[in-house]
Length: 73
Image 1 (cartoon, rainbow, N blue to C red):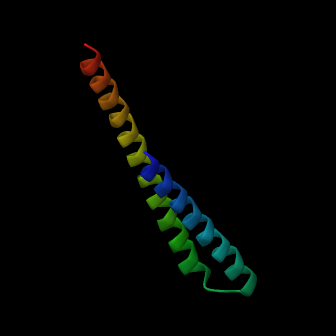
Image 2 (image 1 turned 180 degrees about the vertical axis):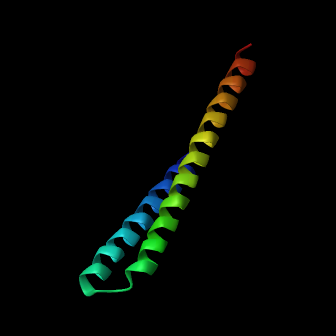
Protein backbone atom coordinates (compact mmCIF):
# COMPACT_ATOMS: atom_id res chain seq x y z
CA UNK A 1 0.00 0.00 0.00
CA UNK A 2 2.93 2.33 0.60
CA UNK A 3 3.93 2.09 -3.06
CA UNK A 4 0.38 2.98 -4.09
CA UNK A 5 0.36 5.94 -1.73
CA UNK A 6 3.71 7.07 -3.12
CA UNK A 7 2.43 6.74 -6.69
CA UNK A 8 -0.64 8.81 -5.87
CA UNK A 9 1.52 11.46 -4.22
CA UNK A 10 3.80 11.61 -7.27
CA UNK A 11 0.84 11.84 -9.63
CA UNK A 12 -0.74 14.61 -7.57
CA UNK A 13 2.58 16.45 -7.75
CA UNK A 14 2.70 15.98 -11.51
CA UNK A 15 -0.83 17.35 -11.89
CA UNK A 16 0.13 20.32 -9.71
CA UNK A 17 3.18 20.93 -11.91
CA UNK A 18 1.07 20.88 -15.06
CA UNK A 19 -1.43 23.28 -13.51
CA UNK A 20 1.40 25.60 -12.45
CA UNK A 21 2.91 25.47 -15.93
CA UNK A 22 -0.49 26.30 -17.37
CA UNK A 23 -0.88 29.33 -15.14
CA UNK A 24 2.67 30.48 -15.96
CA UNK A 25 2.08 30.04 -19.70
CA UNK A 26 -1.13 32.03 -19.47
CA UNK A 27 0.79 34.83 -17.81
CA UNK A 28 3.36 34.73 -20.63
CA UNK A 29 0.72 34.36 -23.34
CA UNK A 30 1.86 30.82 -24.21
CA UNK A 31 0.18 28.08 -26.21
CA UNK A 32 -2.85 27.56 -24.00
CA UNK A 33 -4.50 24.98 -26.28
CA UNK A 34 -1.61 22.54 -25.86
CA UNK A 35 -1.44 23.16 -22.12
CA UNK A 36 -5.18 22.66 -21.72
CA UNK A 37 -4.90 19.33 -23.56
CA UNK A 38 -1.95 18.29 -21.38
CA UNK A 39 -3.78 19.27 -18.21
CA UNK A 40 -6.89 17.35 -19.22
CA UNK A 41 -4.77 14.28 -20.04
CA UNK A 42 -3.08 14.50 -16.64
CA UNK A 43 -6.45 14.78 -14.92
CA UNK A 44 -7.74 11.70 -16.79
CA UNK A 45 -4.61 9.77 -15.82
CA UNK A 46 -5.06 10.84 -12.20
CA UNK A 47 -8.71 9.75 -12.17
CA UNK A 48 -7.81 6.37 -13.67
CA UNK A 49 -5.01 5.84 -11.16
CA UNK A 50 -7.25 6.85 -8.27
CA UNK A 51 -9.93 4.37 -9.36
CA UNK A 52 -7.35 1.61 -9.76
CA UNK A 53 -5.84 2.41 -6.38
CA UNK A 54 -9.24 2.21 -4.70
CA UNK A 55 -9.94 -1.14 -6.35
CA UNK A 56 -6.54 -2.57 -5.43
CA UNK A 57 -6.86 -1.30 -1.87
CA UNK A 58 -10.25 -2.98 -1.45
CA UNK A 59 -8.94 -6.26 -2.87
CA UNK A 60 -5.90 -6.15 -0.60
CA UNK A 61 -8.07 -5.49 2.44
CA UNK A 62 -10.30 -8.43 1.52
CA UNK A 63 -7.30 -10.71 0.98
CA UNK A 64 -5.71 -9.66 4.27
CA UNK A 65 -8.97 -10.32 6.11
CA UNK A 66 -9.25 -13.77 4.54
CA UNK A 67 -5.65 -14.62 5.41
CA UNK A 68 -6.15 -13.51 9.01
CA UNK A 69 -9.28 -15.65 9.23
CA UNK A 70 -7.49 -18.70 7.83
CA UNK A 71 -4.48 -18.25 10.10
CA UNK A 72 -6.60 -17.74 13.21
CA UNK A 73 -8.82 -20.79 12.60
